[in-house]
Image (cartoon, chains in turn brown, red):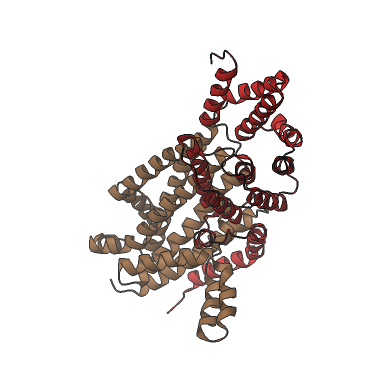
Length: 252
Length: 229
C-alpha cells in the first residue's frame, strides 16, 4: 500500500511538472475565459450557453490529457529507463500499475476541481442559477475519465507502441458513448462475426452514455449517483486488475 | 495466465458492484434517452447526427444559437441573412435540443415579423415544434398567436398577444416589435396615445443589455422625444 501511494505521489508530481500538461491547462483556462465572450453574443439563455460549451471544453481537454498520460506513461518510463529503477526496489509490478493509474486519476480529479471551480465562479459572477445536475456533471465527468485512464493504461500494457495504444483508447471512448446503438447495429448486420462483435462490445464497453449527464436535455432526469459510483469503481477495478495481470507476465 | 486469489477476489467484488448497479445505471440512461426521441423535419443533418452520436448535443445547440444570434444581428450592419439559413439553424437546434425555448421565441418571431422576411410558414413550423415539445410554456402560444394575427393584418390582436408576454418576460426582440407596431398605428391614425405606448416600450429597450435593440430604441426616442440618454 505504501509503495502504491509513493508511486501515486510521484506520478502526480511528474505529470504536474510536465510542460505539455501545463500548456494544456493554461490553454483550457484561456478557453474558459474566452467562452465568456459567447455570453454577450447569445440572447435569452446566456448562462446556459456558458455551461454547455464550458463543460464540454473542460471534458475535451481533460480527455486529451487523460488519454495522453495514461497510454504513454508506461512507454515513457520504459524509454527513460525509470521503470527498471522502480521495479528493482521492493515494488511489485501490480503496485507499479495501480500507483501509476491512481496517480493519473488523482491528477485528473484535481484538474476537474480547478477548472470546474473557475467555470463555476464565472457563472456565479454572472448570477447563474446552478442546479444539482450541474455539479454532478463534474463528478460523472471524473468517473468517465477515470475509466478511460484505466483503459488507457491497459492498452499501453498490451500494445507495442504509443500510437496504437492512443488509437484504441480513443476508439473505446467514442464507442462507449454510442453503446446503445451497438445492439441496433448488430441487428442490422444480421448474424455472423460482426453481430457477435457488436454484441460483445455492447456488454463489455463502459456505459458512457449514462455518465454524460452534462449532455442531458433537461436537468430533471432520474439520477442514481450511488449506483453510478459503484459501477464506475467496479469497472475501473476490473480493468486495473486485468492490466496488472498482463503486466505481471510482460517481459520488460 | 494465473489469476491469483487476490485478483480473483478483486474481480469478484467489482463484478458484484457492477451487477448490483447496472439496472439503475441503465434507468438513468433511459431517462436521458427518452428526451431524445425527436422528430424534427429538416433538422437531421450530418453535423447534428454526429453531435448527437458524440454526446455534444447541448454544446452544439449552444454554438448554433450563438451563430443564429450573429446571423440575425448582422442586420444591424446591413447584412441580411437569408430566411432559409435562419430556418435551417432553428430546425437543427430543435433537432439537437427541442426543449430550448429561446430558439422558438427568437427564430419564429424574426421570421414572422421582420419586414425583410415575413416567412409565416417557416415561423409557424418553428412555433408548432416548440408547442409540441413545450406544451406548458406560458409564452409560446402568445408568440405564435401574435405572429399569426400579424400575418392576417390584425395588429390589435398581435399587440394583445405580444404584450401578454412582454408584461412578464423581458424579450428585447419582442419589445422592439411592439414599439414598431404601436408606431405604425400612430402613423396610420395620428392618435398620440399609440405613440406614447411606443415610447413606453422604447424606453424599456433603451435600458436593455442588448446593445442592438438598445441603440435602435434610443434612435427612436431621439426621433420622437427630447431624449438625452
